[in-house]
Length: 497
Image 1 (cartoon, rainbow, N blue to C red):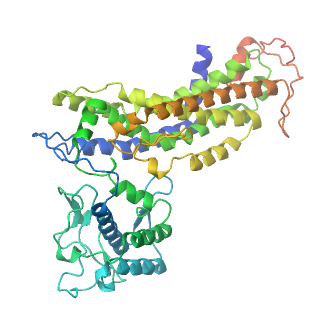
Image 2 (image 1 turned 90 degrees about the vertical axis):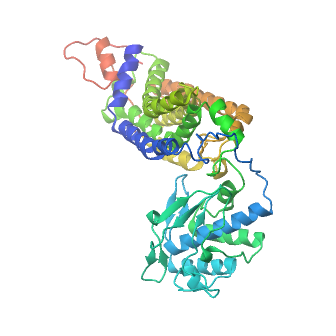
């Protein structure tokens, strides 16, 4: 059994699609996960960082998730300022597939957004475009100024930066902005030209944001779901740490747990798609090498054959997922040692096996069954549909909002341990249900494979000469199962299957 398992692992490792999966995981780890670790460790003295420890025990107040008038005003001012700067640069963020993308608007849509901005702010077209030398009130009309962010602070345009393009629009590159921390949420800008009063009601503001979001695309920053995530008090905002968040990070997560959870969130979309490709490639290798006549009439049981191949594919898929965060684990453990904090050394293993493994099991089980049944690449198309429809809604990005139908678990923040534990029961049930569904599908794949070995369930050209006699030795059987050639001159009669 172990020899067979080792052979299947080698076959998986020789697959090009397997290394595509590894490279995708590596890219996500290097560009989406590890920079967050480095960033947080680089600002341990920042009150917005999860590492922050207040010397006097004075942490930020807890923010309520129930909006009041002040919160609604903050949302209107903050979102409108962001829309102004998006309009000027003609770059709008949205999340069509869970990852951020930028969109450039046509002139017609830019004009529509300009009209909405004029209605929201009461400012002139020249001021909004940043082309006016001086606004009517004597202030600098070209500087709508700072872009406040959730939790206080702002991105401030450095003096002398930015310029006007050929269309007369003010353009500022990302490097032209400097982050300046602030103590209160959405501090008003100190630049005179950045001050304006909202000219519409909150209901009208939501209507305008809805229309703007439709123009930008699915899950844009200005969609109601995203505005709620950014402004209505949740753990995704870059806000000063509260005492509860501090305790959850150091006592509940024990530092490494928060990063392990975030790591799983980052790779979850890869785990929902690419393992299917590995499974399909492995199952169709015999067909590509025209070895089906040798692999079907086996003395080895269908259950042993299918389960071994499935276990090998799952094991090889999980291997890089477990290895990639090792470096960051050592860095975090080193920090905890220097800070005198007790860390959870097994956090990455526990979260990866609990959050990612069930998803990998299910995706590969579906691909296994479909490929065994049809002997073609139908499972690839199916996996794409599952990836498009199986991703949780944006409102689950902050974590804690689970359901039994979730194929992957999202928790796109280093905070929120308490919210996760409050809903741990449904989370556990979800992972168990996904795992059991995967095992049931594997059992069904074994049954289908067994029937097909006996000549049943044939489709079109899937008719195998099960009535032929094959002369093979036991060594030839093992070699043919792994796709190798049989030794010449060493044969024996096998029974008809």
